[in-house]
Image 1 (cartoon, one colour):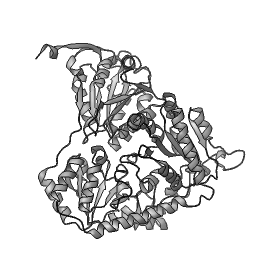
Image 2 (cartoon, helix red, strand yellow):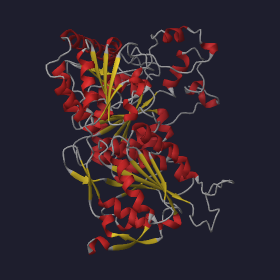
Image 3 (cartoon, helix red, strand yellow):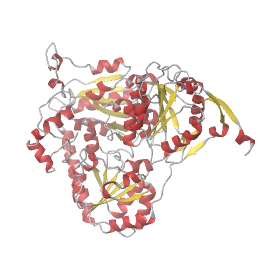
Image 4 (cartoon, one colour):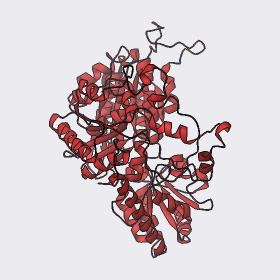
Length: 632
């Protein structure tokens, strides 16, 4: 051991954590080296302001700290940042103890469900316990070691409570592993008791040496790959399902080459959307409940399904009704947990490497040309249907399809579109036409309302340098806006621009649709079906939100389209919103009134719990037969 190896640096726990974060580097898909941690979102309180807050203040020029308005919002912004960097960079988020910490649990769930890396640093109570019980401490009568931060255990990939400074030596390598390992990535939670944050220790200097993290590319087992090739060679109607793992592996080009070499149509999951170029004869469209009729028709007849980088959740598989019962499934995934689902033939490996090796193993083989020709015909019919919906009459209220169409037509290869909850995901997954590879964030793993405000803040930070001429556009409903809008102020204050297209349909319209389509009466979803005098649509007692005035009060530029605006006015309004966002370096909110009952239909089934009293309703019976059309 050299003298340098024996050198130590005396730091507080918080200082050591921050210095370690600054020493971590990451390699992007193009080989560029960048900081692993792009910054920190923070709301300070008594649990973190003096320990971690002081340490962050000391390095504010090297590691930027952005002030949030809600802990959930800033942690969701960190999720949006991770997706926009293809999981190659990470944002941290820190809070005080108690409610501040618990507010981040929802965001941890979003990151966990979507397999996205974030580092959450909630403050905690005193490890020494001398002042217990402290402000915001929840006492557990039978376990004094428990705090509210234990709630994170259900939604964390890696959880630790640092009760001694030297514990960082053991835990930080594991933190880096989880944040950068495609098979195990997700939210990391380090609970930091406030007394431990300021405790000093002689840390080894080598702990802070620069370390470059390259995403490992695991090669598949040779026998598993050979058997997968054999299954595909016997296929007459193969379908490739491309998930988010293809995006994060940087395998889009390899996917396109593989599909072309073997004549295999490609359907995309919500996490895999915009991997295939538009137009392309093998691009079948979005798959599943909120997908396209074209991809779903091919899935129903496919005899072999090659699922690459997807966890095959129920909206992708239409509750496992979208595939033929006798179809063989070959699943390629970096995580064995996902690869083995539903008795698939599992091939564990990196998507880009595995597709390349499977391509070689299938040299000389192609699916029957008639199958690829059918894929092109199905997609052409679906595109014509979408064109009809986009061109349809507004009849006083715009449809979601028209809103999506306007944004789609105006978007360039520098732009990025984002959606999460309500009816928007069905329109994006089914009807959006890719403008560039990996140009969409469709958070439909957790379908978190409010992500559409916080996520674009993080995405705009992530893309500011890589896509300086581009705009992030978030599409959301009035329900999401009301649930979590405060990060509009955060982005405006910090000078981060994006466009939020707010579709006001007077309530939770998509859940109203689910409710009534199964035979139940409308109740507590549309505002007119809720208790209180404010529910009345007209008259002195009617209570509605002035979204334009509210967004303006948060520092946003605003374009407010009156009810009855047509597509031409929407087009002009969206162009103006883009201009205002760029000119002001702040969010621009476009408010438009949309039809609560007009949806793009995929023709797919989704399994939900239905009371026996409704089981005789015709729509439910049609759904059981696979005919109920549901896009929300």
